[in-house]
Length: 193
Image (tube, rainbow, N blue to C red):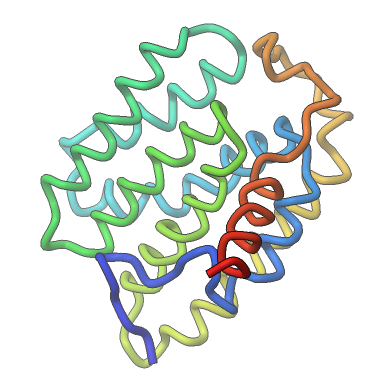
């Protein structure tokens, strides 16, 4: 049974996301950026089919590509992410579209910090599940998490082969994965309660 809490079906502790969260924690920042760019179109299409004249989530996705290449600066990217989240708020009653728009804000946020990659999983998977007929939702969870996982495994092996322009801040190789750091902090906090 799917339970909606705060317009989202999944969080970092959701059992359905455990394997992919663990895989995310092992990836480079560049790998996660390539992964969210790869996976975002299936999610954004949910919003665009319902609201074809609202371009804010698409603009956030486009800004993801531009920022990852260093072709725009953080203030422009931040504005695009906030606009995607505002688009989500504007369609608050359409839970699938709302989640899809929030997902695009997190896709763009992934260029800034790895922890936003889980936002694609939490909001993107919510959008995909809520877009499906109720009778198919469990199957959608299983199928879509596998697709996300498989695409991340692909980028895990292909990131260094990808010839593309990168923003200078994404070229650092010795930076610890911030999703892993966040999980460790949250685990310590829970243990101390």
